[in-house]
Image (cartoon, rainbow, N blue to C red; front, side, top):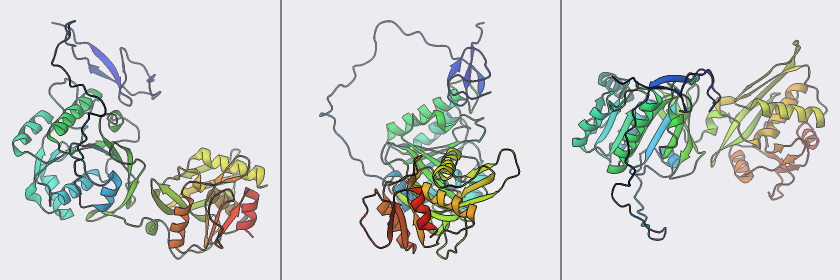
Length: 450
């Protein structure tokens, strides 16, 4: 009897090694290697075999512009570029409990009005559990949803072949498996093979396929990270499970723009789209409070106003604390260093806490000026005027640089009642009464805290 050959595969990046090692040399993660049985490779003859492939020039390619399918959720349609593409493979990732299964059940319920039938393969929950969730969400058109509670992917797809579904949902990719591979469900080998089977199933029949994948904080489960190069669209749910807000972000889209976001609110009836996210993250009735400013954050092509909070207190530690939530810690340290060098402020004996309200992430430099003014205001106990919006990037030389789409940010601020806008003097904005242009951080401090 032939001895089974084994290998060690990284559950984070998918790279394989002949023997176990503590750290993966591919992604530098620790304790992520898992032992798997290596499949015997089939011997391929030396001569070429198979039919001739179709060869054509780029000009000869006939582009078929298939009509997109509207889902009935306008926010989601705008997010993915106008609707579902027939044959498109979409991966929806997120931490367990963030609302992926709830959203998919709502989505196919809306699609069931115009597109029938729809298939839902569940490897985690039984048919009874899905039925109870559908009743709680008051999901209609249940007769048009074909439910398959099966972990064997081959058996599930063979059973669905006679129904000719128009759309397929697999929840989740970590729980289904194919008997063609000897690896356990959830392993890198099974996930890749199942994804390849689903991709071929959807492309051959021209039906959209949604693949749900879990992402854990410790990275113990290999999931969407090893599938991003296979699928057409990658969507991620962000947000704390304890929070009512969920942010659906596009990380990859072959049929539209990336970086777009859609905001949803979790209710007892499921996820409801938020048309104006700024209404949730800030209040129209604001008061002057030290360390609190409103900054316009760009999420793709959408501008969202969010509240930025900073707290500077006396430190009694040898190394003062720098605690952030929603802000890059390196960016905070950079702004603090610029304030000390060019603003004449001292933070060496101060604990600094910074937070972006609502669960958003400040990942662009457009909020640097607002962060600097929030820190300066909390340090000196001086509030930033509630009718002032700060837009600009802070450089290491203490200069204020212009940011992209400043006009869009100002338009969103005017819609919420802001009267003054502090921007860079190098911006190409027109000279208006409510636009205040500053060139340096010192000038901005004098303007804001006049």
